[in-house]
Image 1: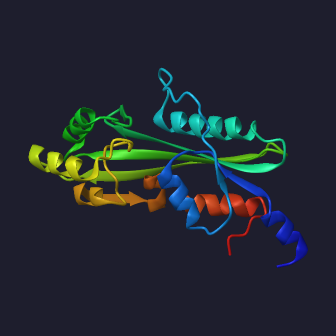
Image 2: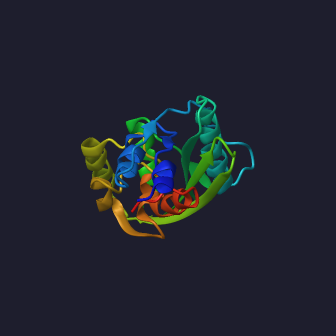
Length: 202
């Protein structure tokens, strides 16, 4: 690697998220980075399309984190919105909410919109994309739902299931361009965005 590439690849990369799942995904790329919680209000605006919500929040997270640094940083922002039949499926947070969510979506397809952005705090250049992913859930009995929730407790996951864990047993099919998007961070798109900023993964 020549000196210019070393300089480009040495820039500080910040993951604007407190999510353990996003951090684990980014670690797959084997690049140094820091994780910082953006601490923004993640509300849904009236009449806002799910993909618009996801992108707005991803960009808001990136800008919120970038403001915490004086030096040039590249900030990764991401947000996910799950939708079934026009209804936003947020993080259930409790057993009761997760049980109701899984009852609602069993036997049906849910679309997960995962927004990704990369913000250069020096140039203010922002790259952003929304990656859809489609998941059909098996028709589960109430007892199967109870069994799953007692074993995995996915209360901080939109849709109340972890596809990277036991939640895969709830799914009939998954369709999309990047399975990492479903977990919360579309790595294929991120690699392209980093490349556009001169950060070469390999």
